[in-house]
Length: 332
Image (cartoon, helix red, strand yellow):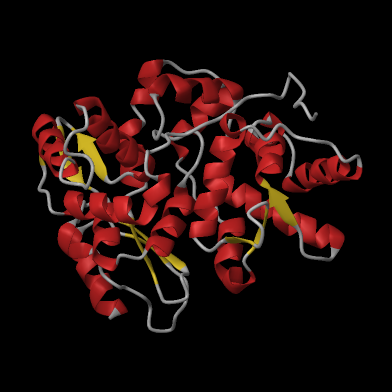
């Protein structure tokens, strides 16, 4: 049975919203209900959203703890609202999914920015990751490993959830960037040659398995047997964008470099994280990602198709509403 060497073992995780058996319906419901809401005091927003959650089939008789979990867990993972200065407002990701009802695109956008460390987990857990030097974008790294594997073998290569769990997610050589994706692939390949077995217990592989499942929903990975997952050749351009992306929420970087922080240091990054994952990100039909950074804070009426006429990929940094309107005029 394969065991990650003790000096490298560190299990990372994320919030696990209770929706995996009904992903499309639950996320569309939550995004729609949140997008209907206005900015309001944090407590009022929570109460109003809880009332909406109770209207979801089967939730009417559930305990308040379960209703609260729906609200906090789904928002923590997907960033559907932003809490700042005592008020809560809907996030762009909620508006986007509610309006487009495109789960594939929603998961692409989610995975494009999803990283460890990130404020999708509790502060003390983020602190543990910082102390271990974790600097990890799971979707990107998994695709990079597959890319290196195909270059090495000159053929089509897939990964199992067990391999992703034990050789990537639970190994600091991958998550703290101690080694390259190629070195990770060589370890997996060596284990295959030795016919090494992995612990496949559900509780062990669940977090790595979640990300693999999300990548399949996003059409980044495909599987023919629900055991081995391959790059989706129909999404080559998007996959290359993931592989080559420099997108990263950098507020944690100084802390990661020192491998030291306080809980207050980590808390200071929370609002910034949710603003980061709620930047205006748009796509065209081929699901390429285009990013507009807009610190102005534009919400309900600003989820707009905005693609340069020549189709070129572009990133805008928008500092004022006036610049934003000018760019809209140019793009259209």
